Length: 411
Image (cartoon, helix red, strand yellow):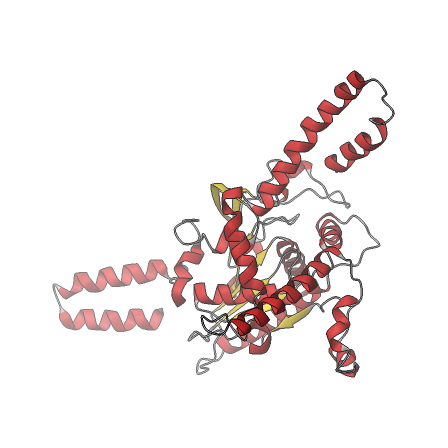
């Protein structure tokens, strides 16, 4: 808003000032104001210039056709793939800069003639949808079947880019990652929706459909987890539900969790505390703290991420109120993990690609490579049980065997 106001003043006042010295007097403060803000916005979103080559490489990887990767032999094949990438890039840029307000349901899409389906991107946005099939989220090899992982994307994310994020999360953590897609409607519309869903302004703008989609699917998964764990002989138990969200996805997740806790009743509230973990990258929601409703919450931010300063890093939460007069909620019930000298906001380039060796306080490190942390509710009992067993080995082998069996039955 400051940049827009300064630009407005510069556009209308500077031409009126005829004296060149007067223009300098008026223009210098505007320049000193606009330039630093623009630099902060650029560096805070796409990172430092030294990282821009890596950002370019990641962009090419995300746009390159997935079915046929570039090969060393066959230049024609490479050329055709290059032109396919340029086509995908053109469609992506169109979606990012041209507002789109209409979406087709699956039934409506099937009625469109096949020779016209390739042109739908000109008029229609991608649908807000829950994706769990291999054709949508890609092949995600995993041996872990007792956990459900969900990814909620941020602004300016097409379905193809979101699929790449899911595949990257699968490679890093060894889990199948379901995708709650919040489709882009252009940068401008996405930002307006962020403001609406965060603080309630622009009341005539419709809230993101992804909020209801995430809430409904989470509710069903939580009920399934509670039901399967109540059956002792059930082999399809769900022991953990993990939601990973980024940027606008943190606003969507915050609203969905709030509605779920308010509308779900005691059974859902208890299931959320028993199974649900959330990991929010660059949390910019108005309610930053979701910890009281969950089993575990963690906010992960770069100090050089300008979007994180609108939520997780905002220093005076009590002074930022929404349209209803409610102050930002940041009661520190969540775990916060921050990197002081990291810049940038993009999930792949500025968080996931540099995650190994950094963000050392994050619990996510314990999930890398398909590993699992101990259930921290039982950690104490596991430790005490092992100590007792080791101690008793020195005195009575039969007693130690009995203790080991009893400890396993308790845990």
